[in-house]
Image (tube, rainbow, N blue to C red; front, side, top):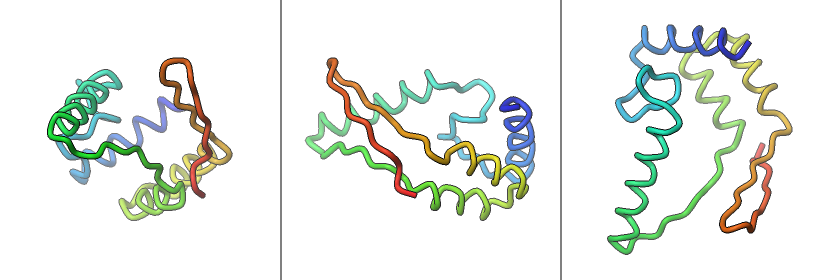
Length: 104
């Protein structure tokens, strides 16, 4: 099911030129690995410059609103919203972890 959703979103987004060059998700030739490398390179450069590096969360409501604003099919937006509903995230660094639930 996720593959079908990915294909529908990708076709629509490419047709409307929504993706930017920094986009990794839903982009041919890019992956989680290329995203992690780009993220790591940028954050380490910030740390080298003495800048603050912080991690924030995005409200699911804001994310869903952005999907709607992009003009995605209502069914895809509702499917995504249902998929995110009740999800939590866990970050583990050196064996110590903390869980959090996104702001809804």
